[in-house]
Length: 244
Ligand code: IPE
Ligand code: IPE
Ligand code: MG
Image: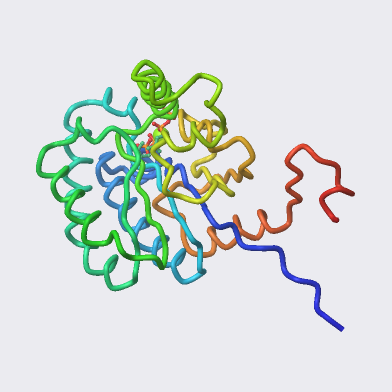
């Protein structure tokens, strides 16, 4: 007798890493201490995702709207990102991880842009897991950019409006190199999407946890994946259709 097959793991998991500020405040620490603790959680969760065999992990690190935060916090976050890229370079390359970003990098400090470009290039041939950081990212901004690119292609005569379908839109999104989003997790108890992967969320399963990001550990990712595995994704069909 064959065993019932276990529900498939999500291929692509994305996390809105929220609650660094509240984590720090609760400990009487400055917000940046929360972001530093958050960077340690990034390392832990990336390693765990690789062990679990996820195909892609996308982490929301900095939104377009986060540029409006006080300058010292923005500068601190950019420094942390720079440290992270340098410190994790070997780990990423040794584990066959392909590093990428989604978002408008042109606003980042030059040295950070260079470090990111270098790591992308060095890891481009890796296939063990896609590790993607959403940086200076906004879902609406991503859709506007895609619309502009498609309009420009129409004007240039390389595309016609009739030919714009889902596949064409996907091609123009930052995420075109990643598998479809299966599971979106948000930490810190907030129940919103905050301009993250608006198109890609269409049929993603959502998991919200009260845990603040710096406290999010391996077991919390396991729990979120277990919740995902316990769900039936129907994509608009009936349960009978899905079971066939
Ligand atoms: C998430 O934590 C990290 C970023 C948005 C950069 P927050 O900094 O938003 O933490 P809270 O939500 O204020 O607690
Ligand atoms: C979303 O968190 C962005 C990131 C986690 C990078 P925010 O803290 O910026 O979202 P809001 O302001 O609470 O919606
Ligand atoms: Mg927040």
